[in-house]
Length: 311
Image 1: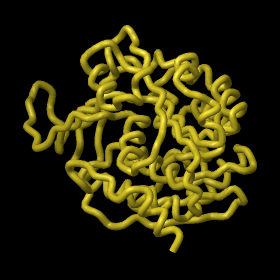
Image 2: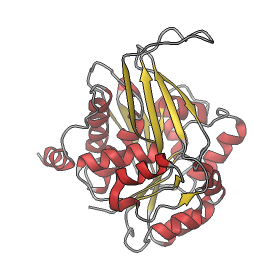
Image 3: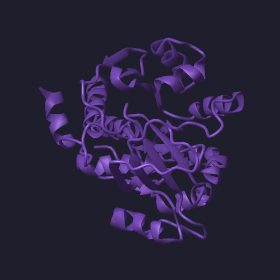
């Protein structure tokens, strides 16, 4: 099993809902469900890795309030060296809707202060040599994002393959954000974007064609993955071959973090050197389990998926 690392945004999610229609100003709405949980792309990814039973390290930061303490406690020893910033912890309030979609209200909080020197102090490049690092939350971690070139140089020096999931830009996919992302992808070995992001980045309406276009912007050996929600996922392998797996039909409860959970399953399977199609199936399966269960579950451990892939 190759080493795994997560680098990026960990914050607090407060989930409320379902709510429909959107309330009028000055009113109060009673909802059926509330949940306070670890959130952020890196946080969701790490929780899924825990459930899969794989080893990993995570580089993140928190604020200097009770939420920050709570987040560090949730990750135990893995968070021992997380820096505590002199600001409040980033909080996302997610309002769910009856169709499973959601609306987020997010504070800036601690995430913009996350920096490359902090990441460098938390991760041992030699221990991660030959592994995968998932880089996420690009449009929230301002200081780190400005130092991406240094981060990519560090990863290259230790033969660490970077998998990128930027998340949705706060100001949308402007031309500036699109060009920045394409520039980052030139240094990455795996792209993990959803269908809308992939087609928006490339201007191509067909997700498979869009994935091939993204691969053309990346190193020759790169893998491009397109997360397609209820339609499953597809991937372009290192040699340009296309693979696709469907998603099972499930009763959707909560789609928050579905793409992050997929990332965890896919990368864990990739680190276990499973075939690419089996990696896609692993990601789709655990994401489908996560969005259809309350409290959230992630299904069977990675060892079970690995055994299935060998049959």
